[in-house]
Amino acid sequence: MILTPLLLAALVLLLCSCSSPIQPPSRILLGGQRLARLDSWDIVHPRFSPEGDRLAFAKSEVEEGMETTELAILDFASGSVTTLLDPQEAKRYAAYKAYVFELDWTDATHVRAAVSDGDVGATYLTYDVASRRLVDTRNEEEAAPAPPDRALEELIPDCVRALPTLPPEVLESALARHAVLVGNRRAILQKDHAGQDDDIWLIDCGGASMTRLLGMGSEDHDALGGGVTLGSSSVFLVSRKSGATLMLLKDGRVTELATVPGKARHMRIEVKHTSPERVYFLVRAQATSEAGDNPLFAFDGQRLQRVVDFEDLYDFDMTRDRRLAAFCAWRGDRRILEIRRLMD
Image (cartoon, rainbow, N blue to C red; front, side, top):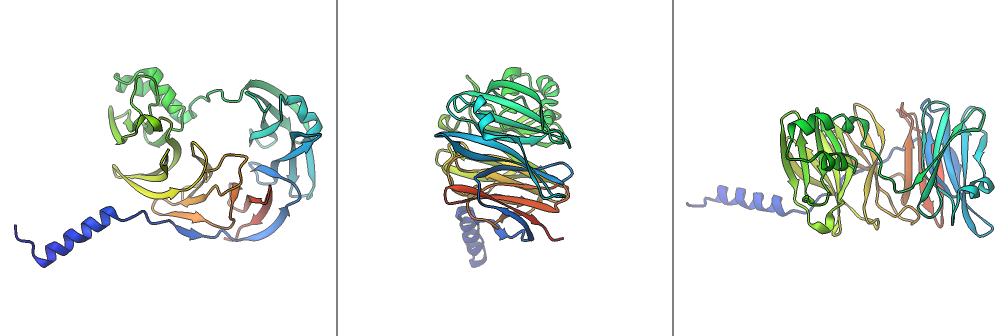
């Protein structure tokens, strides 16, 4: 075959595009008007109520040489901060220390906090916010495996029938470990089970098929770090020992979107806000008690953008109507909280 100048140029362009490094996502600012800034406490886990009229958060404190915590509610109408769990009372739940590692609203009037005892135990406390009463207490191991997300759990009966070579216990375990729902009866998962490979797969329970997306070594047995789906596009995180990468699955093809630096042994995606137009998600790239950046991204199904309002971001939340945003960021040895009203 004779390589004409035009054919040679096309070949060079193809080779260059295949070996070119990943281009970083574009950078955007959410901006907005600052409503409040709390910088005299070490604040973690800001969470807006479903109606967006209150914000729950936890404080990390040290009393008499022991790390402990406080659970508080900021009411936007009155501007007042009320305490649900004070640091002294929180010590009751400590073996070595007490700190909140999960916080969420179960409905418009109830908040649930997961308090670690600093060892292997955890206490889940549910409060009625209006009365400030503790209404439910549950104890379990902090590392107890969570059941699959409800939408993923609903795949199990169909997938067991459609994929007989995939044992039910392997399927259920994989769906509970950061699997990603990618459409009607389809999911991205990593089997991560004794006697199974450690590869990342796309399973189609409707089409009765399994497609290997990425081959993984045994040292990367817990590499899949969750993901998000918008329309026909899915972004998922692969956290190898060699580094973490955000991947795009679209039209049956997998491509690399962005590398994510960090020190966490297993990075994870935390979805912060979803709408038909855009998904905001944070990559937990640092160990929870270590300063550093946990990058925030916006994805609209076509473009991945990095939100860069704050350096060394620790956490983020947004009201359902995208009217308010809460940024939690490291400043020295503490985490500050800034609440903003976003512009249209």
